[in-house]
Image (cartoon, rainbow, N blue to C red; front, side):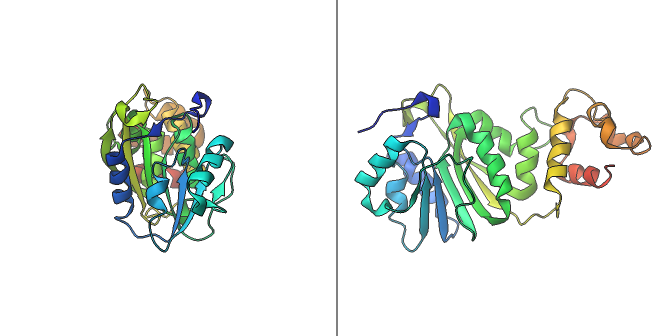
Length: 250
């Protein structure tokens, strides 16, 4: 069979009910091109390959799992990219959907990759550590609301779908998990300078306990800093607030 590599954050789904729930959630939205991140032992893959008339690619870093997948599912020949999801080029030049039981040690980095590819990413169905999943979907004025919340919600409609218990995996992780869905909402805030926006949000949350005037003072002129919004903390601002602030930066 195969081994589990702790260094790669491998916790493979074994609960067929959860697998079917994830696939059902995936199929609620139409798609032509699909990328699975970290197929591992093929818990989701075995259902994905039964979906008719789609173009499918799987990204798997672990050579042992690639060998196992190709042996178990010969129809995956030519469809597996053996590489790190964080290092690859965009897997489809057309619009595509992303699905995966994401390795928890790089799940946030995967989301930043999604943001890089955002114009072409239609939907994401992902398994995350529950704490991270809750953070992504958190609204303003909550302690979970942070950098990922703002950046993802600026470009995607977010939805927490369901919890997944530790016993659903082999080996069981030490944390609970959650499945979320991101649906591209076509850049409603018309953000054209992503790096500038990202830098603003990251800087604001760099000192989240302090009034925004402190971490952001180098980004705005003295007059702008008199605006009452700078007496708030990073977690109090909506996505729209951050977009408005970006327009006033030096």
